Image 1 (tube, rainbow over the protein chains, first blue to last red):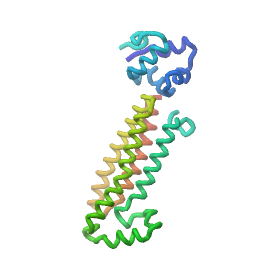
Image 2: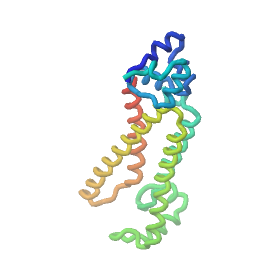
Image 3: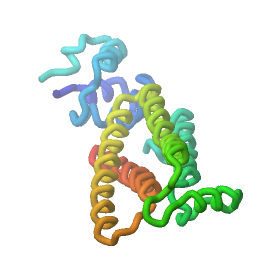
Image 4: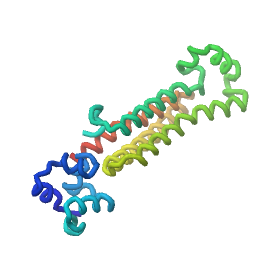
Length: 62
Length: 156
């Protein structure tokens, strides 16, 4: 699954550690999701959606 | 990096300490053969004499009750280990770390089972028992630890 997490994060000037802290996960998790090597669960996808104020399908795509 | 001492969350630290205690308990409850080193035998020489007096040179322990009791004691660290791992996985909020730990645990099980198979062949070949419970615990903890590092590295 592809995502535009890195772009969204950069637009807000957040580091991976900042985003990880906001989500309550490790920085490694954010890195793995950003690089597309780990697909987040639905609860985490909803957290991202809420945090970026965007629908899930705007962040993730097939 | 997660699972570096300074970066451990309280849950991870507590779980690792509990796993350490389980490993120690594995060593302490290895009473299956009086010839294997055990701190309990040094602390309680009577225990060693008792086990030795009930051990037949060819048929092992002669008392069924004793065999049952020793089996139950050696089961304790295994059950506790599963309990610690299950509790950790249930409480770990980071799903990525949880996935890494599960993969590492599976590798740990795989290596332990492979080790058991090898030890089984060696025991048959040399016709003598090995301290298999100690070997299992050592193999499992070491291989799980190494597997975790390797799995973690694959995501860098």
